[in-house]
Length: 322
Ligand SMILES: NC(=O)c1ccc[n+]([C@@H]2O[C@H](COP(=O)([O-])OP(=O)(O)OC[C@H]3O[C@@H](n4cnc5c(N)ncnc54)[C@H](OP(=O)(O)O)[C@@H]3O)[C@@H](O)[C@H]2O)c1
Image (tube, rainbow, N blue to C red; front, side):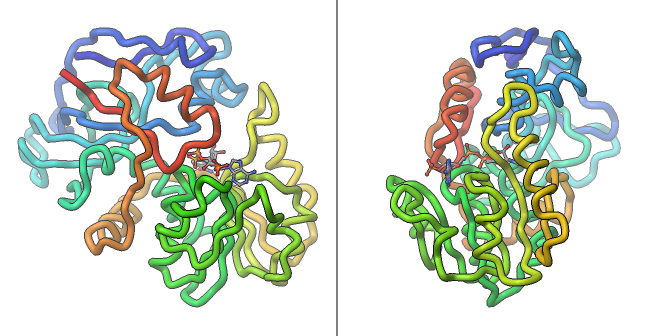
């Protein structure tokens, strides 16, 4: 089978397609023929060799040379202990090494919602789970509350706007001029074009600020937060060659020390109950993955470069071609 491999850190050009042996599922695994996947900043960090990635995966070169997490595809075979899936089932989920024609999955495999294409379902796992956990678990968002989403037009942001609406919140989305219509079409009640208006100068006060872009320091963000509101840091600019967004995140945590607001940074965890909740939102048509562009597996470096611009509109999908 074809799979994406990287044997050194560097630019997206280190990503190569190689032919590997097709995996065989063990008794408790499902073999999935992958139709689609998507790129995420985590993969960008892994490939570019951020310090944190090197500490986990090898200081001088990656020990785990496979990459990719999100997937959607069709079950090809199942191990003898598998009862929930059978060959031919359309599925999606998360599995390391997903930039490949096949993956063997034990944990995160779910029925693909019938109303999503493979490209849409393959763009879900990382970004949608992050958005859901940021809003519900860390942001404690309740129906009727006001949330501001800074960085509303990228992978996480486009899911966050829709999920926040589905949870009954009043949503203000912050994005650039070219994405204002997208944010509106996703259901944002109000859209702020950050090239024309600084949201931290607004007289509005929010119950939750979901900061995906990290474009303002804490003292400015605090101005638009109600007392005891939640400020959830999802991401920040890749401002440091070795630490990426971590320096900005740490700076914010320190600056916010002693504030009445609850400041949280978290790393999303794949959990079955969250996938099932997302599946329900997809099935009810309340959330729909927005895919800006689809690249064939062979163009993985171009897809990664596109993501690396930091201005994706929704998700960038990868499809496996014959
Ligand atoms: N904590 C976690 O577990 C977790 C999980 C996933 C991702 N993340 C982090 O979350 C961040 C976003 O991920 P993503 O997948 O959504 O990335 P993405 O798809 O590349 O989206 C980035 C978005 O940021 C927007 N943006 C750039 N500059 C901005 C600014 N000054 N003000 C407002 N928006 C701005 C861009 O919109 P415009 O084109 O309109 O500027 C773009 O839509 C990354 O830092 C990533 O590492 C964290």
